[in-house]
Image (tube, rainbow, N blue to C red; front, top):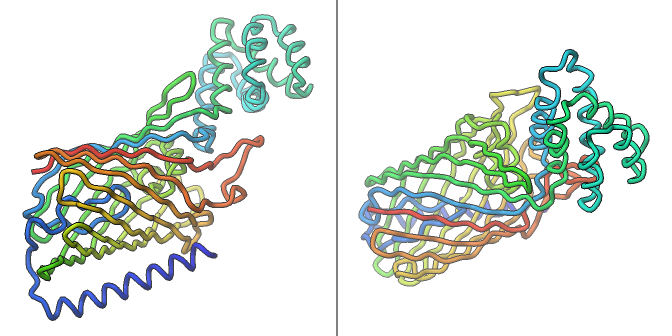
Length: 398
């Protein structure tokens, strides 16, 4: 409820700012701002105003984000078990028995500590010894039977690999890597950008890849040159097309702000508004969004989900070679979006040398959803947010 009230307050403030801007706009001559206005003020996470045409015509680059997180999200758990079952049970005369025991076996094996794992892994050829070792490790009799039945049907040369996938199920030191190539075209009034996010999950024993949803950003902007300062008002639409692989869902929980980029089931047309003020040494930008996520793939009875998003960003010395950035971004539930109440802070810097611009920042949650709203399996969090994220943007601008 607190997140909802904060969101409503911020949204009301944003519309109030827009009204004031409209009044000032009526008294000032609108036009394309000078190149020095709003140059180099793009934010890394929240929305930015449309850049003036003279500030940027074309840009190409890539966003890179790294974060540690508990890899055991629902989509990853299902994918890991699916790979294990396919590997272990395919080609058998009766794969149904193997498949029936796979889930229970994986759950039981995932609870074995790293120190005890060698005792299991080194005794997979003789299931009688395996059962004795499981008993000595305190595994319940019914779980022992599931593991032995599962392992007994796997060819000996495949057992270590198939059973080893259970270690991923309880991996706590997994790392996610997001790569998002992007291109941008900027005309006098319209800005168009396209990006294609990709998620890479680096487990202790393997690395998985999943493509995200193709993203388009269409932005219309107005500018007013008020001599000492510049003012801008932009209206935009983010469109996320449901092209992601199902394994990409896990990345959405690593950073809740990026849900539409990675939830493979949803089409998301998200309108937004950004207000900006540019002074000599400082740029301030405020944004507000409505994010409706509409299920169109693997629906399974799911209803549309709607949440709001708001943000504020400050850039110090945006027109210089070296500048400093700080952002606050939050989300709040509107409809069928339980758990979407969070607040994030980020800070970093950017370097501009000729046509090249590089930005680096760190993001961390200030307010996170209650774990009871995200769920657990076997005592392992399914929706743990990343404790922090490192973000980098590298681009060439013309």
